[in-house]
Image 1 (cartoon, rainbow, N blue to C red):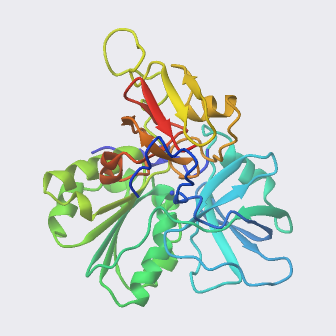
Image 2 (tube, rainbow, N blue to C red):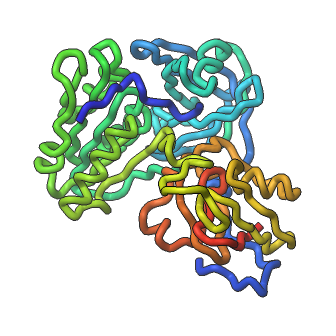
Length: 361
């Protein structure tokens, strides 16, 4: 498999339905909404170059207070000066409550978040951050294998710290464009595990099939470019171990967007790429979703101020409970089992596979 690690986009630019006859029922909070929605005003304490194009940013409380605890694999919202909100993985010391650390790859062809971080976040600047939350939790296992591509190492740094502290065996397969692009390598090497490096310009790419074959009993955690994770997903499915693979995606498939028909002919009412109706169970009424707009856009047009952040289907902020209807899931957050269950959707990207769906909004 050939993956250009320069194409990795950083995190920027994780109950049974009530009947329709009970629209006033308040749903359980989503994975994002369950997190504390407060923001923290923190000060940029340090900016440090970690690899080619990658800077780390350390944030502290201006008054020296302890920060909310977090777990390996957590990420948080960064509220940039322009008003843009982006998500970045925490990659600091999970036992250090005095600071948070993120790392950001400057990506000129991105959506602008990484450029703003690199240009605007300087030591001493105050910045609003959300509280930590997770869509990439570390689960109990006898053996861990981590596979990272480029800046995809960021959520894995804290995972390796946790696993090493617990005395569990672990192995890291780490690919990047060149040796200059490996971030946090000295820290990782100090953890005592086994690390295999794949500088693309020297040794080419990882042999994912060989990695899967070498670790038949391990839990695999992967973060990196989409093609890397897609290939690994297919390989794990082929050997019947899909449930042992855990992914953190930083971007959505560009084909899985509004108006991206995969069939022949024109989109029609009820097609996932055509128009459909959304009934608002709690607030009442309904709204038509056009072929060139998202469900999120449509419900906001109808007066429902629903929260969102990434608007790419990767952060979970817009997660909404589905009361009825078939969903065309286009996010990169829900598991296959969660998608099959069909009781929630990310309304920033996912659509209906039927003429009408009912949402708990």
